[in-house]
Amino acid sequence: MPQEHRGAAGRGGSVLLAFWIAGTLALAPPMATPAAAQTLIDPQSGGTAGAVDRLVGGIISYVRWPGIGRGTGLATCTVGQPALTSALGPKVPGNQPPLTNWRATAASIIGGQPCDVIYLGQMPVADRRRLIDWVRYRPVLTITDVDPDCLLGAAFCLTRQGDGIRFAMNIDAVTRSKLAVDPRVLQLARPDRGGA
Image 1 (cartoon, rainbow, N blue to C red):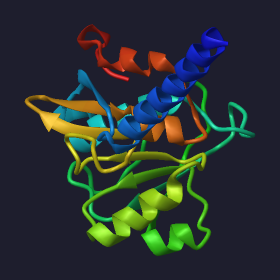
Image 2: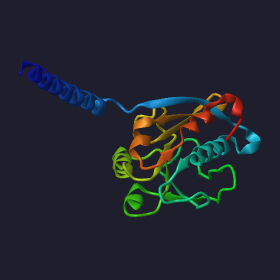
Image 3: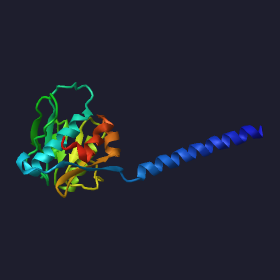
Image 4: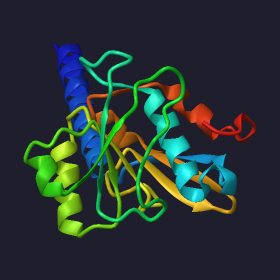
């Protein structure tokens, strides 16, 4: 009998430990994985905007949407005022169909405007929060260029550094999305790769 009692107490301790770990993780800040500069800014290839387009296209090439097969066009939506580009036009490598690019608002996306990729620029904090809350657990890729620490909820965060564009990945946002993000996306960070 005493042995059973110790076992029950051990299980109770394990349950408490599990709750403590879950609570700690829930309260922890989102984890961002930094990645090194990948895409150099080349004035003859569109400058900063061209580098952003190549990097965003490279990221998209490593993501799979449920129910959308390879070769199916995706809709990208730019919300707010981006810091690194005035008009997003990602270039997905390989034999991919062109992306449809839209300007949108948080309200239009939440209201049903189809967007597979949302590029978040500078926007009111309340709109950003509503949009990030709405995107959670949906198959939508979020990318921003106004959150260098990648703590505001986007899956990927771009920033200019020196003569290149760097990105960070918010593991929490990627995990909550219903997207399959190939971990090889971090290969984009290898400086010897020379562009997406």
